[in-house]
Structures are given as structure tokens and as C-alpha cells.
Image (cartoon, rainbow, N blue to C red):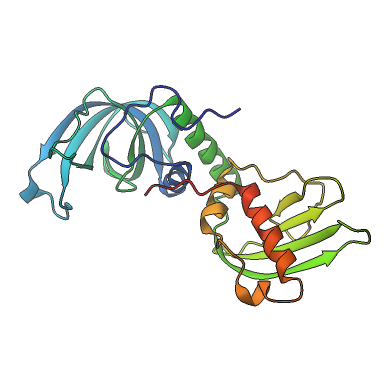
Length: 259
């Protein structure tokens, strides 16, 4: 069973936003290099030498010792440097970073050992649970070449079965990468509805239900609309389609996003 997202003595980098599961999914998809590291030194950069620094933030040049590389296109030096913007707390201060263990979501290495964070909040406090989640997302990213992100609902249909309580609903999703994707809700008398996530042209009704903790489910949960479009849900089977769409969304899980 997967560890809770904060299990394993997470080291808070307050007042920086606490990443949710969907935030980690986005970070994992957009980062070139992901590593666990311990911060050795953090020197504040003077504001006049920190272009683009937002009000209420301070910029630091961080030197960190890499403990583990979770994903990288090439070798990563044992010690790296990068810039990070940290929000001030209500007292106008920032937390001490030296000694903190962090998960780093990095972009390009623009000089040997010098990296750029892939996101404003690409430095996240480490915990065993967080690393397990990110490792899983990175593995799924490598296996599937990414994750389907919904662009819109293209069509849907609902077919009642031959006996009362039996039906099938198919909801077709237009994805940003053009890959076929559909959500299928099968109802049988006396049993809970069964949801199938199909990423091909052939739908297997015996396929397992979506894993709410998977990269694909998290990304879809965040990119699908909360309701079926009116032009799809407004027909003769609109009520059944709308109900089954909500069943499919529940099977995907919630969009746990904080930034």
C-alpha cells in the first residue's frame, strides 16, 4: 500500500505551499532531472541582483549534496547549485535551509553542476512517502511516455441493457496529445458500477478499475471538467450520462493540487 504523502518525517519548508499529489504529478512530468539532496549552504542574493523576484520572496543560491537521483538524462554531479525563491513568513523571515533534505525538480543543467529549478516550487521538503509517490510517477512517465491530459469531452452515449439495472456508458475524451481515451461505466444488477479507463480503440470490459493513485488518474482528475457539457448531457439519456460521468470521476480520485 502506498505511503501517505507526508509520511516519513517531512521537513517543512514553511511558508512555501505544501505540494499535493497533483502538484507532484505536474512536477514529475515537467522536470528533466529529479533528485533527493541535502542542502549544504544557502546564500541570499541581494534583491538588486535578483531580477524578476516577486514581492514577499527572497532569492537564495543553494549548494546541495545529491543523495539519490530519481530521474536524469545523464550523470548528475555529487554536488549541485541552483537558485530558489522562498516566500517570507508573516515576520518577514525565511526558514533556515542548511541541513534540510529536499526533493529537487530540475530543468536544464546550464553549466557543470549548475541547474535551474523546473518550477517556482521545484524545491520540496522530502519525506519517504513523497519520494515513493514521485518515484512511481516517474516510472509511469517513462513507461507510458507521459500521461493523458484531457482537452474536452468529445462525445458520449448510454445504452440500457436487456435486463433492468444493466447498462453501459462510454464517454470519449479528446486529449492534448491526440491519443484515444474513453471512460466506460458498466452497470450490472446487484453490484457496484465498474469503471474502465481505455487508452486504445478496443475496450476490455474486464479491465481493472482505474488506480486513483496513478499518474494517469491524477492528471485526468485535474483536467476533466466537473460536469458533462450541456450539449452532451442534454439529450434523452442525459440524466444517465451525467450520473455515470460522476461515477467515473469518483473512480479517478480527487485533484489534490495546492499550487
